[in-house]
Amino acid sequence: MKKIISLVLCAAMLICMVAVSSAETALRVAWWGGQERHNQTIEALDAYGAANNIKMEYEYTSWTSYFENLATQAVGHNLPDMLQMSTTDIINYSTNGQIVDLKPYVDSGIIDLSNIEEGSLSGGMVNGQLAGFTTGTNTVTVIYNKKIFDQAGVAYPSNEWTWSEYIDTVKKIYEATGIQSDIPFLSEARWVVESWVRCYGYNFFSEDGQSLPWAEDEKVLAGVAKAIQDIADGVKAGYFIDPEIQIAWSTTEENYIVQGKSAMAFLLSNYYGVYCTALGDELGMAMLPKMDDGEKSGMYLNSNMYWCISSNCAQPEVAAAALNYMINSTDAAAVIKTDRGISLSSEVRNFLATSKDTDAYTANVLNYVSDVSGVVAAVNPADPAHSAEPISVLKNDYTAVMYGEMTAEDCVADFVEQATALLPN
Image (cartoon, rainbow, N blue to C red):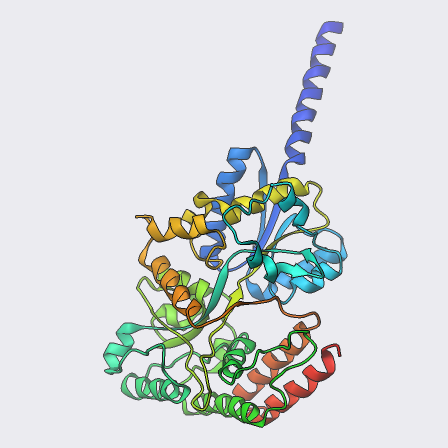
């Protein structure tokens, strides 16, 4: 009987040890996105977890609710181990000590830089720490439905088109077919306003993050206000989509352009493949139109988003190894492709460019970002501290103009005034 009891106890202890071992190798990963991104990320991480005996736990939502969930988890010191972070929020989470410095894991070799230029990490640097690892580089684009253009008898846009040509194109397509176009970047006005001010030679934020360098240039202020008014006039005339409809979209599948009900949309380039897949057809891509009285292209390159490790993570080395897999593995790239931007890894870029399995959508994005790189000098750094509130003001004011609740001139003036007050100086 003593032997039996001893064997039972040993078995129980072994079961407990296995359970503890499994718990110790669990990894919570969080991100935002559409269903296609969810599917791709889960497929890639499931394979990694199975190969490395790690229990993967996933927390994913749409963009609209992601940071609300993170804020609640942060208060309870219960952030996921590995999490996706935006260029705006990474600074706040880093300065609040909620995500860790990744440099020690680079120094130890867990995160491999052998195929990555170290200078390209600058976008994830916050106060001298590597707060996040850039998932890839992306840019902005106008995507368009070629079949709708053909139906309307309108020529496809070129990379050299102007703002007035863009507005004229939207009108012609609507008059010929009754098909509208998306309001440019209704969900994030900063992305289109940045392109406008860059046409006049300005960055959106000053290098020290304390001001808007274009805010006292009357020519720029007038140009931005006119462009916003052009869109508002189009909403009123019916050739842009009703903002009440567009603002309600929370998934890729809800967007009119993937339903064949919109001619054009302004988009971040990494979403291109997802939109084509949802539509089931190849969309065209063009650079954002240049302001008529601007001096240069308004295009820019951004760090798309970041992978970070939270300060709550009990096993940061495990998280760092998983992060390394997501940014360096060609196996992961074969699944995720360019959804989170064009990889910093030369090996991954070469793999995608030469693989016989690379689809036309991925090839189009690679070629497009390469073209943009030819007219843009450098990748933007992460947004400065305290930038989230001014950007939110711009979004709200821009939306108010589209609803007819504010004039374009008041929108620009109010944003400049509030941003000046909110940015540290």
